[in-house]
Image (tube, rainbow, N blue to C red):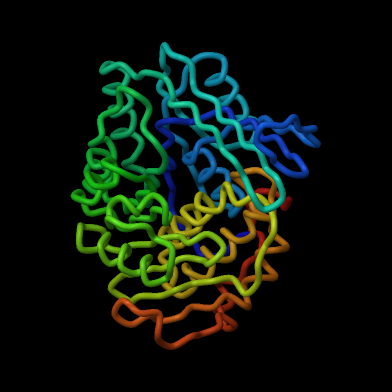
Length: 346
């Protein structure tokens, strides 16, 4: 699935990539043995997942990251085979692994902390980033930091990217998010769990997400987007506040839905698309990602089916009351369809 809007290069930064191992089981019961019905080993981490979705959308994409050891070499080889350009700064330590156990609509994820990055390795990455970002229209900074990478890393990279003329999307949490907001990214996109610490309370409702998105903007982002899982996401920007949802529940593995949303937002930002279409594309692609058994992909047929029924509700103040619109009239140049250079359909 792709739009026909023209966009520039999108750089997906993956400071803590992973070799993802996904086990599919009928049900997950703690304290018991399980028979695994499917095993998938796949290059992952949030930045890599974002790049995969961008590739599927047909966007020109470059992955910049840190990688080491056999797992790092596996990730580099897999991205090369998938025709996703990447430049990884080599590490002496081994790239991490993650394990996801998918049982119906529920996914349990075990994340290793990542390799220790030396000061020299981090400095080398920053030099490479400054060199490559000159060609970028949008930069996506997502995921965790491995040990040794400072908590100000995303703030520093945002500043460098903005100085080079690129727009920046930040999808992280904790101190890394707090620091990044001071560098004024175009979009901050944490999920409900990730933004709860910043807001100072759990984010469980649309009202909570709206308050959190407003806070992201007050702290420096031009737009705040807070994802609510199956209930879509809330967006706050100069165009207003909106609650965006798919028209139906999609069953499957929700692990990569947030990464798919970040990719779709980056794609729309790079293509200078109208805000309603960017929001609708984000809702359709992120919901369709749930239909795939692993992160870094979405189901084209599901996204095409969902797109006409995406609802964009205009929110007032900190209450979910306003005008609801159904996105039935996307302009012809924003029709979700393949274009030359887009990745094959799933």
